[in-house]
Amino acid sequence: MVLEMFLWTSSRARAAFGTTEEFADSTRGLAGNQGLYNGFLAAGLLWGAFAPDPVGFQVRVFFLVCVTVAGLYGAATASRKILFVQTVPALAALALVLLAR
Image 1 (spheres, rainbow, N blue to C red):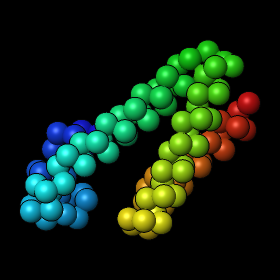
Image 2: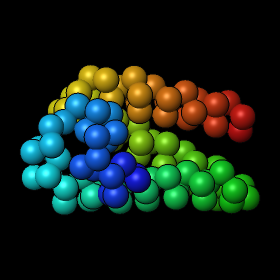
Image 3: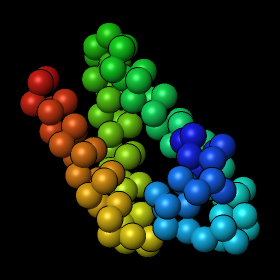
Image 4: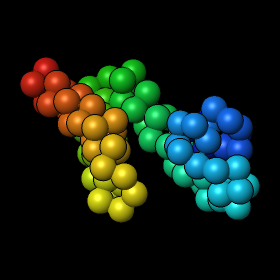
């Protein structure tokens, strides 16, 4: 979230996302929107982590499914790397949440 919303044009963010300075400048607004979305996902996951069950369980499952779907979409449309850095961890966390039930 921080990289996308506030540091998108920095050398660190450009290296992390493999973008050029020109691309980063021209997509700053889109990246900020993506960062905000990721922040909402993170907030939902934190809510689920601390909310008492049954609401906490439902929130954890919902947001982990959201992260998984977003990762699948990103892997299909942007980079297959997203499958391994977003989708696989989300599925592993979802499996653990379901097994702990």
